[in-house]
Image (tube, rainbow, N blue to C red; front, side, top):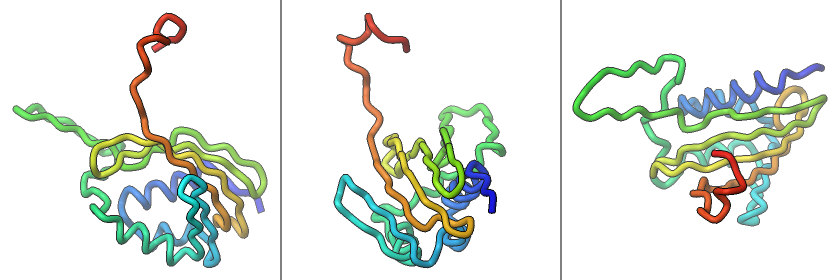
Length: 147
């Protein structure tokens, strides 16, 4: 069975941005195992993954929108909000893949999410996910880098 890894990630991220947890669950096997090495946590079962999303302490923001429908109108206060999750890169072959997401948390901070995953029957069965906050580049590197 050939899998379009980009389509799979786009479907998952779109469901996350809509907070459509039924659709999110459909991208995973029932016995999904997700590891967060930085915190030492292992999430077993797609129902536990869903419960984490549904019980996020500050809730997932209502500001999530479909970027394709974004329209900006002039006003005294202009606030444009991007989707919570944006697919930056997806690579995959066979039943294994990796992804990079740019993530906006409800507090407004931007984080990078990098994950590797294994598929079974076209659904994610196992994943390892790393999280890293965006940060300002130090001034001392300016002469050596592009911005």
